[in-house]
Image 1 (cartoon, one colour):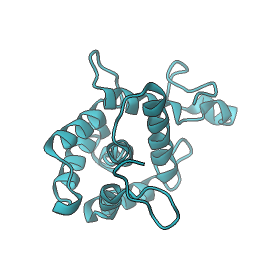
Image 2 (tube, one colour):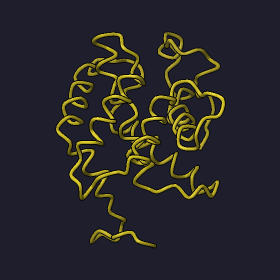
Image 3 (cartoon, helix red, strand yellow):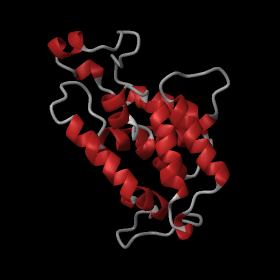
Length: 178
């Protein structure tokens, strides 16, 4: 491992990702989302989904030799749906709300765990672009878009639930990928 500190269990630490998770604003928005999705029948946007996205992004990064930083990948995935509660409550698209909230969270991190301005811009661009892949998408943006879709096991969803889902079949992940 290069330049990565290891936890006592031998796994790499991610202090900047830990700082995002521990952010008061992140926790407030995450808890609001958990409450709003408590009775949700379809896919939820909790930790399982966020870390599924992170791991898929990391796998794609490694397979493609992209050289992205682990903490950038995981922070992006952890933050990408942070605007969902705002969408449920006001109708503001969660990619727009998420970009704004992520930027605020990232800018408020303690200096010792700070992301650079360029890293913040890349993370926020990825969050803004994760719902609709645009032509010329940045690498991190493309990975998040792909991982977000691949993380959904629509193929395993009960048929009655799948039929009621608002996603088109073209958007659903109907085969095992990743």
